[in-house]
Image 1 (cartoon, rainbow, N blue to C red):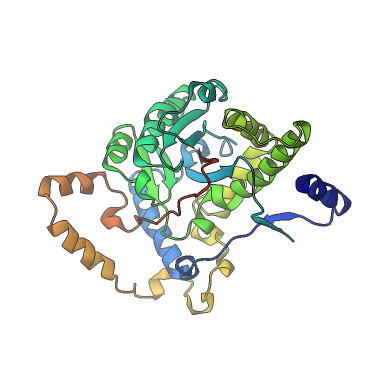
Image 2 (image 1 turned 120 degrees about the vertical axis):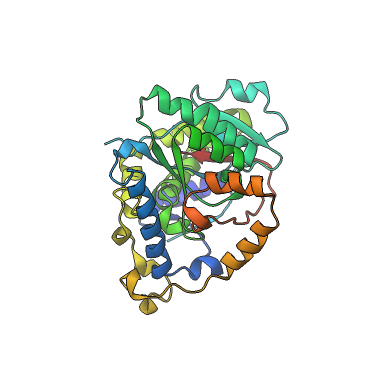
Length: 327
């Protein structure tokens, strides 16, 4: 069987390692040091105004999703408290999650559903309201807390914004198209977790005559993969590397960015480029109902949508997939 040969091959060649192959999109490639430092400057101002800049590490969180295949494909090539995980949400591609799947979930994990297995506004709200917020209460986390998320539309609904504002969960949208250098879970956690997941899958299949993993067994096996990691160290390093805790724009490795030679080291030295999106936003707002616009304005943070952006998400064609939301 192919996976048995591969496992033997890797055992015979310990000098090889596994890496996830990633493509750098045009949008990500265009991110500049100036724009990243400008984002840090704007967020720092807001955090200071809310007395949230130098809070305890256990009050700073990051939320993100990633897909985990039940049968991993060949998508890789050879070549203090800040590290604690809140209970994750596993999103399955169901109209209704079967009872046998719920019964086999780890006791503190949450199960969600959507037509395609990806996060949507409804299950994100249910997770924040029914899992994440009660977990903060149970762990006696001091409010307000800061939650860094990407700008996907499922994270920025009116319902989520109003709930978080009421419960003192301050949502901060990361710089658009820069989550590969600003998202702690992307930067430090998902890569080792997916390597651990593939090891767990291979071991399970070897012990079960090459059978395919069922959705009923998915969550418990994924927890096994999570438990093999030093999450506290990994996530603590992720927050430090991305400059989110301690909060510092100087923590970013700007050599990862293209056209870095044209960037200034001090954002005050350059006049901010013109933003056509602001004019489009003004036009859009002029067409909205004033009361609705007022609610969005009050719920939105930071001001003027400077850190808010929708990004498209390619839907998985393979329905044997679960989307995992970690916090």
